[in-house]
Every structure is written in structure tokens, then in C-alpha cells.
Length: 82
Image 1 (cartoon, rainbow, N blue to C red):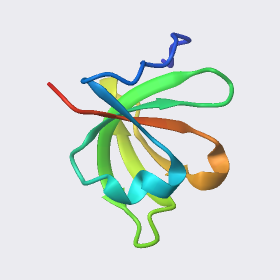
Image 2: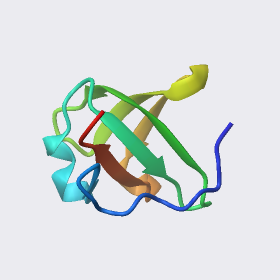
Image 3: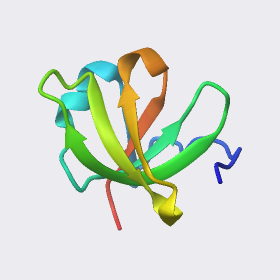
Image 4: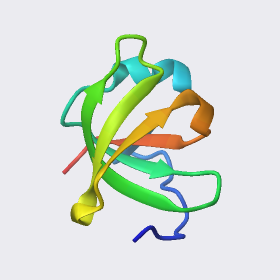
């Protein structure tokens, strides 16, 4: 189930990635996602499409696999530790 917690702050543990930086993501990167409706989830990057405007994430807790795309207005933070 998605939560309605505040998005992480940019710290040593999280790096906010704008859409033009999604090409920096790699499979197995841990990410935190925040959607426009204020729901958030965390998961593991599965696959990045060649144009890097789309990527797949396996959500934690068995919530399935989702496609994140630039039109979705989803905020993305890469987890940099842990």
C-alpha cells in the first residue's frame, strides 16, 4: 500500500533526479518515488529504456512492477546508501 509521507530531503542518503537525469539510473538502484497524488513508494530499478524517459521499478513489499515515465510527473530520488 502506498503511503502519504513527505518525500525525502536531498541528503547523503538520497539524490533527487530530475527527468533529464534519469539516464544516471542503473538496474538494481534503489529509488523512492512520489506521485502527483502525494502517494509514495520505494523499490528497485529493473530496466531503463534506451531514451531514459521510461524505466521499470519493482516496488517493495510485493506491490508489483510499475513503469515510470516522464509524463507521469513522478518525483524520483535515488537512494545512495544502504
